[in-house]
Every structure is written in C-alpha cells, then in structure tokens.
Length: 147
Image (cartoon, rainbow, N blue to C red; front, side):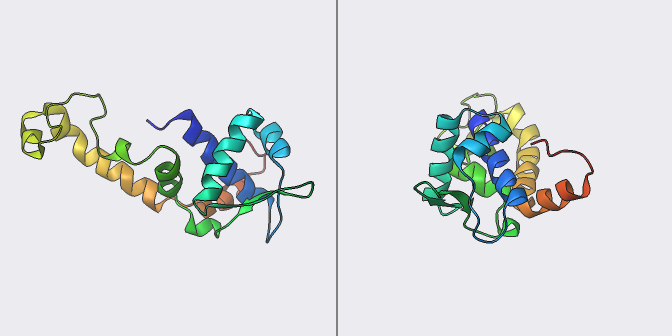
C-alpha cells in the first residue's frame, strides 16, 4: 500500500521522536545503523522531509537530524503525503481505469463501490495517527526498541 521508502521515513521520524528531546540532533550514520537502513538512501528521505518542514537538518561535524514539529503534530498522513503522495487514498488500488477522468463512471466499477469506504476509513486512520502516539506506546513497552 505505501512504499518501502515511505515506511523508512515513518520509522526514521518515530526513531527521532523516541530518541531526542528538545533541539538535539542525531547523525544519519547512527540512525541508519540503528534502523538497519542504507545510509545514502535514508539521507535522501530525511532531506525530503526536512525540505517539507517535518525535520530539522544541521550540516557539519556536530550536525544531524531532529524534529521540526512536536510529535503530536505529525500524522502518518503528513509523512505519506510528502514521500508517496496521496494517490493511494484516491486512485484505484488495482489500477482498473473505468472511472479515470470521469467520476460518473465510478458507479460502474464493482471494486470502487466496495473499496471507497475502506479507503476513506484508512485515510482517516492515517490522518489521526500521530507520531506522538507511537512514542507513548513504545515507551510503555519493556523491550528494546524495534522500529
């Protein structure tokens, strides 16, 4: 449903929210090692999020990444819309083009009739689920952080 790139971005935001406080920064090398993700690829994802005011980025030997917003003000939908876009919540999930360019044709698509409510519900879940909720849940669990 969402790309691996988007999943990595979500994991990285959760990681930062769990591991920093205030204006702290964590370097890309540490984040990529702890999340077992390729550093250069993760760096591109992080820069994309920083450009969209989701993260703070500081260059140099004491640089790294931090959050630009309170974790309770970052929804999964925010991250998905930056990395993957919102087509997954609007376009046909199986690629049938019956209703492309003509919403009137939606009534003829059996899949659209069944999937529309599910997609709307899923969109609402992504809009309402915040990174802060993940952080609180993770901090309650008495096991090593696995993101």
